[in-house]
Image 1 (cartoon, rainbow, N blue to C red):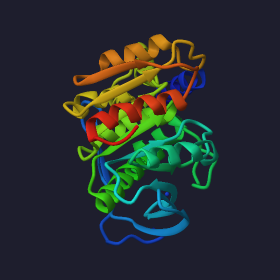
Image 2: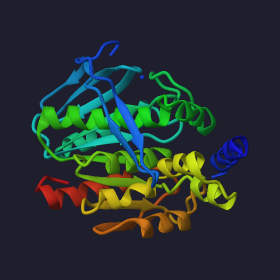
Image 3: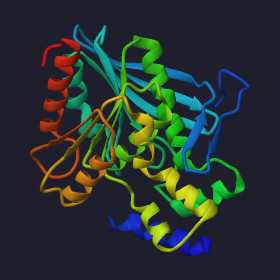
Image 4: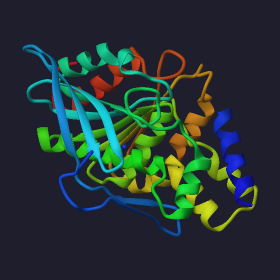
Length: 295
């Protein structure tokens, strides 16, 4: 039964880790009977390199040394940001595609942290999203990489919060929007969630249709972003989707939004799939109104 469940999950997905830590504490996770993930992430140490600085912003490379390997991030921030973003890229998205974006957010008064997620083909080691392998780790009581990524985002939030003392949002595009939703639900210290061109994975629906129960169903539920909408509320949710999205259909994005709880906002944007300058403009406008920054 487990093999069939895993194969079904992979089909759905196809379609649609300091080196030492600052504490001897071990990271732990649990998944309750409703499939809701909880994590306790051990403190990390960091190595930081300043890459560029001027009167407007500073760009740095921050490597988080976790118990499960190094995770690379890049931060662009003005001296005193009004808010901050933990940005989770979609499959295959690299830093190079976000250089101008990071500057734009900084100039508007917001810190922008790009997380090079595990297995996304960048500088952070790992394997591409693999429910089969992750479910194997889950059954053994070990850490699925999916859950490790959530801890990485929680630690990223903590780094920004400690450094700047401002609201920190979880934001992601496409697959990254899925991870960001889970992180925002798991960590109440995130100020809110922004999902762009994203939706549920569809793994849970597949498992339900096949009649699975027990661990396979719990695991499938724990992966779905919408599982965590109730835990995000009453923090704000913004969902952005383009009508002509060829990767994740617009209707999937609308259905995802409908599952979210208030306060929530759905915004159609110009383009096709993934974050783009139109999305950036709309987000910065929204936050300029909230935090009194310039657009």
